Image (tube, rainbow, N blue to C red; front, side, top):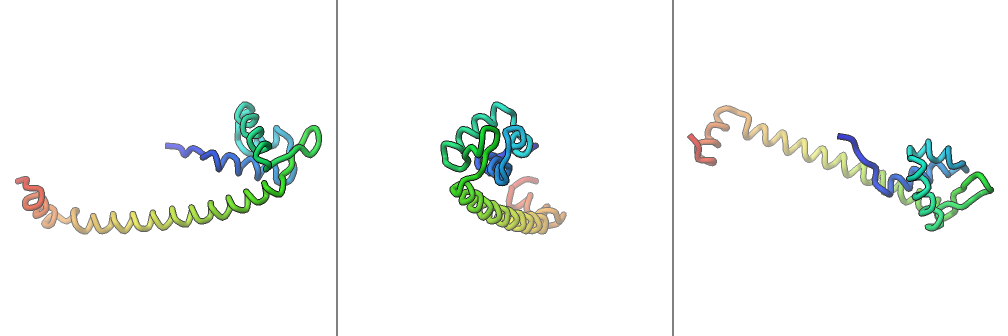
Length: 118
């Protein structure tokens, strides 16, 4: 099953595209958005003060936009670390469960005396 991007991720993708000045088509391609979604999100990031018009055809990042990206990069780094830690913990749990329940004698004991089945 595919992963969907969060709204924060989409906003960050747009800001990453705009970081070095970009036109709508460049932002749309780099952020992997349809024109309709780009228009919605672009309005939002402009209203939020993250992006401004550089000239008639291109957009640029504001200081507030740079601040958002810096915060997002830190958030993303920490989130990834936590996901990796959670995966490690989950793998440990699975290994422990296999030790308990995948051995025939222990499995038979568990079924008979713990679960009450014969």
